[in-house]
Length: 372
Image 1 (cartoon, helix red, strand yellow):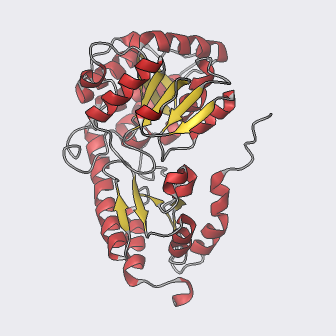
Image 2: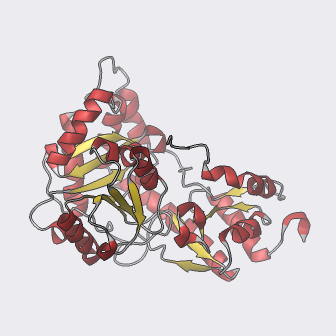
Image 3: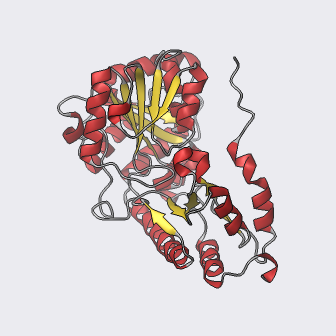
């Protein structure tokens, strides 16, 4: 049976978006985690200086880029990697959607992902006809499991998995002979101690994997920490044998990160000052929005890291979406991310200071559409 991709979840938000847009002062759109702040000047300069890109780029990335990725893992995560253990990707979403296919997973196999999950994990399984299981309990993963996705910090809920959590998951995946992948693109955006000062734990941490990264991968994106969503700049690291298998497919399909983007990535990975500046912006927005939501009767669950607040009023998610739309604020219902989100909404921090302040003021005033 052909895969039906006609039902795009965000289409359900159209009437709520129209309602929110009618509010005096305009919509505050907190439904999508797309960066609104400028790309750092140092990165834009590197991109511009590399625009004489007349030859085909390397699918595996330039030696300088691979070294920069490995150095970043060593400096920020305490993980020692060689250049053959890293691979640039054209954003992280294409890798997440394609990995099951590239690993030869298919019918009769199972792909596991978090109970509250970014929908692309399930999409990747559906593209190859594999079974799926949304579960955070390694003991529940079946013998047919061939691929496990972890997401820490989580989208949508901002949950951070501890070293112990990660170790238990890796141990179980290895028992099953499955590849396990940590999607870690919010690792630099931790808000609660100890991750307010250091990255959240990576699945490649020696305390997690021991002395070998066999069967284990980490995926990271520069979209969030460096405002590079439009560059499609990401990478994967870990088991060299698995990456070699993936690289072979990517060479045949021509999945080449553009050379100017590769050059920009090198600069972005080496410069930590812009990451801290961006984190400070998000921290201020998060603090303001969280106070306003809690003052309006919301409870914030998890949300220890990442670009979202996972909020609930103890009612069906779409009722909360409607309540906020009446106040000119658009958010995503937790049901977009599985049954675990039936009473939650995901509220993004990716809006300007002015829009975040407007949302906070509306929550404080209680004023609805038409002044009611």
